[in-house]
Figure 1 (spheres, rainbow, N blue to C red):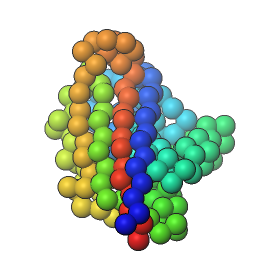
Figure 2: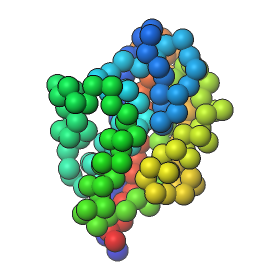
Figure 3: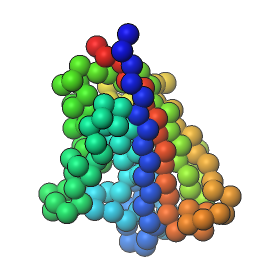
Figure 4: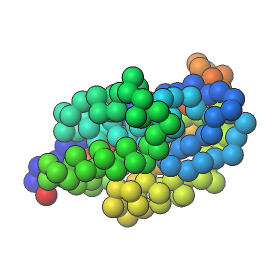
Length: 159
């Protein structure tokens, strides 16, 4: 049995007049994440973990922030493209484990919707997508509500 593990990380700054999108779900909040695409840090961390497991680089290689075609892009569409790269190489996802670090808003009420949405795009069952939420105990830029970050680990298995 061939297996591979990849890990991913992403962080984006919180700003006014932007939507807050995590795991493909729009969450009501007075601040949103700033980025070239929709700045969905959770989805970006998962994509980087998927790419890293197969030594395919990172999302900046496939979707560079200097390319205007990715401006405002829906990260779930990018995730579907990365998933296609895995399938083309005869790999599938066994499971994902991730954590979103944010002081606010409280994410617990949104976690199941995020799991369901990511699972749908990745052709998985919801119980194959783990999402946890924590704070940074008011330490650093995330703790001071300057940004939100996410970490992800993905286990892949060859078909």
